[in-house]
Image (cartoon, rainbow, N blue to C red):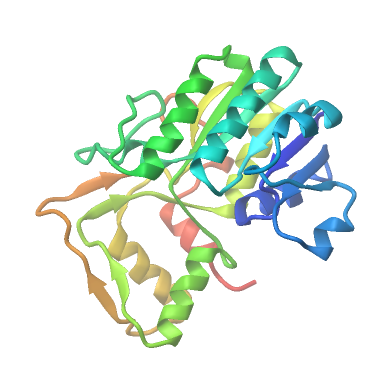
Length: 271
């Protein structure tokens, strides 16, 4: 049985992954803040990447798969990932890195595919690219790069933020000229589960297979959530449509693991 360590397993994506994988694999996770819930769970380890070296945990636990969903200080993240890559190279282990559509945010004229050149204008995007470039120098079977667009779900931070703004009577910033794709957390965890089971290699774009203007998506999402006549603040950062979307092409998943914009919207309903 694979032994999986999820870095950042107390976060939104990391915890959803832990809940998806724990029944099928020997699954462990890290958490940062003091938490009675996690401290009593023998599968969780407290880890502060700014003061601790991840190598100690890796050498003691000896995972066969590391999934990185960690957040925090960028410099500390880079150092932690470089230590993890050193462990991967000398062990029977692979690293699955959850990256972002922002690695392409300097390209605005078209959507991006798995093996397109990365280029970012944002600090966040450039940080992700730095780790991606290091991973790409590893043998193919030693890594996965999993690029995500905006992630939604019925209990996601993005949906919670939207509801809070509406409840406070504040305007929701929307971008009428930005074309995106999106995804939903339950589908993301199923996709990653599949990639682990089938031992798939390389780069994956885990977003919807269709595109939408960001404003239209938020408008349709509000309708699905029963929010009527929301107050929008239109933000125009270009005179033309610009794309921030990661579409799958080279590494396609089976049809049942693909997702559409409408699937994402439906996945945000209250359970």
